[in-house]
Image (tube, rainbow, N blue to C red; front, side, top):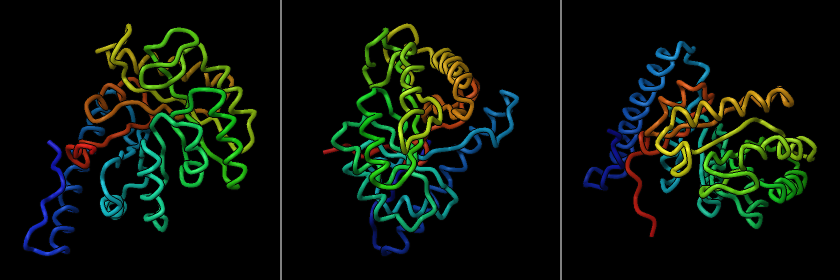
Length: 255
């Protein structure tokens, strides 16, 4: 089980930091063992799967420790937290992924630090991202968030476009300045035909990815799986897994 942050004690700040670094190293090692075992079980090379550590609710100091431990991909889902953290860690060799539902009034901020937005799910968001990417002089990678609990033309409970809307949205991204179609993302649905069937859900995402790559060959990224179901994602063929709790520990409650 992942160990959470230590309580401040009499040992001083340096001791607490070293203790936390040790905890994170142990947790990362356990996650690495899980990914490696899942790859072996699926007959996949280990280097086909990239770990993204979801650092939401944890401080920039943890991000720094993760970077020291070799982590290069981190994710956040709330701009008001992510923007500050990314600024504090701007000197680190990190790629920041935005994975939460994104409102258009937050796009200018997100476009300033995110390398990849994994939650692109509507045309209006594409337009806003393109405008702000051009303004910032940056190119943003975009993953189309697929809602496997959504019917045609409806967004999912956790955001995302219905499977039959992926092709049109990809075309809009491909035609937008400052944006790049990198692939697809999903969260295992809590409702609909794939509820409780994570492996089947991720296999369906791989089918959608295959269809997408027929028109956009460079869109090879498939982001799926979290702490509880990363093995299913690897078995299905995911290229990236998003792991938070298993690395950082049980999250503190948001006030």
